[in-house]
Length: 313
Image (cartoon, rainbow, N blue to C red):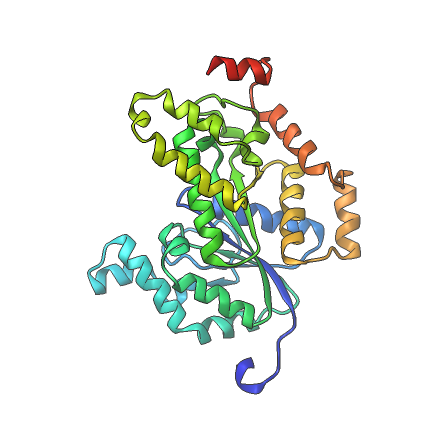
């Protein structure tokens, strides 16, 4: 092992893809693998989810070869949540297995497809310790946290998502990018109360509190919601990048954000391939322009001004 020989491995870049179950992590890994391959980047996908039995992508390292959730539940008489916690503790105790597997792939870009249990990233320390060990092995990683975009249509759920995202950012301790996934389904469960940039940039949350106060159920929790909003805005860390995996322009924006976070620099071949796909805008206004483009494609506009929307409250 490198730690025993004293030889430090070469610098390796990648993403740890995390988020709640069903947020699209595996689909993201497949889409990002195909996208990066088309750019000329050599990609390795690592399945870190012992409960993930069907993998739609080509998997170079599979944690299920070490431990599976079904085996743990049967042998330890645990439920799915407790079983998954045990699995990640088992991986943490057998990091030499993971290191030897990763050593087989040099000069690659890594995608770590992680489990979908929120507690692993907000409370429990095994996954955090695994990420920390990866950093000691000279990995430069960005935490890519996916959440369903349709939560934006429900103010209560959106505030909950903000709290989860903030807690994850503080606990995982990696360069962090929050993603609003499945943008094509953003209004599947209801209309957005504000423009998309209100949610991606996490603007003044008092407007959302006013929406919640209009609901009799949430009215009695107004002070609690108010304090939660204050915590989120006091930290001022959470923002989102909208994503539709099937949209190349959306994937480019996510990739640029991730690469900026972990310090990865495009090679000449990648840059030429990227420019060949589309001439992507680069600069201070790119994020804002990109959000406007996403809104035009996926969000039905009401035609009202901001003042009129506020008056509707």
